Image (cartoon, rainbow, N blue to C red):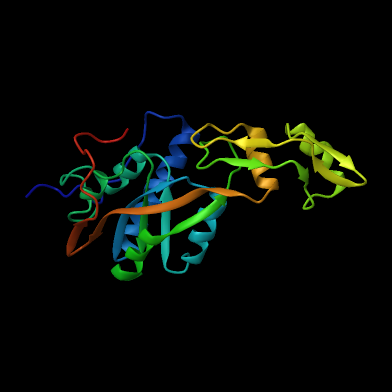
Amino acid sequence: MPKSKRNRPVTLSKTKKKGREHKEAIVNAIKEAVECYPSAYVFTFENMRNQKFKEFRDQLKSNSRFFLGSNKVMQLALGRSVADEVKPGIYKLSKFIRHDAGLLFTNLSKEEVESFNQINQIASLLSICESVFKVDLKEGPLEQFTHEMEPYLRKQGVPVRLNKGIVELVSDFVVCEEGMSLSPEAARTLRLLDIKMATFRLHLLCRWTPEDFEVYREDLDHSDMES
């Protein structure tokens, strides 16, 4: 009978020592999670914001573990075929780890995890991205700002002045147009205005347990693996 490859140590010998050690630590952590949790999922995400994801992950840290990073390393940890999978059937997850994807290992029920598909958290725009809608300001006082903010607003390109200690917009001003890339100045202005635009969404792609494998989204090309 052929010797099982499921417990074979994985060596990443083609990388520098520090990088190799880090990747081997991830591989070992994923293998440990496979043993500790009864189910595993591959998910993808839109508009990842570190703080929003950290808040979400912290809510689940008592019963779940997330992995994000190199797709190739995550695939390697799980196995990319029947011959090297770490648990029967789990290599199927690797076929879905492509592009912006992550792994979730959890003790939560299937119904609880499937509710993640409804996650829809709005995050402030902190960097250059595409504007979802047009934002324009009308000429007149901007009473939400103190007089100390006037120089900073002008630095962002907003046409303001002080009028008797009140920050005043001297003319109508378009902060951003729908569908246009946001400049850093526009993103900072939106943040000052507390206008939120980027939406963090999480989508489940597939689910593995020792007894079952389920696909949530069929609209993916698995003709090759993400390297």
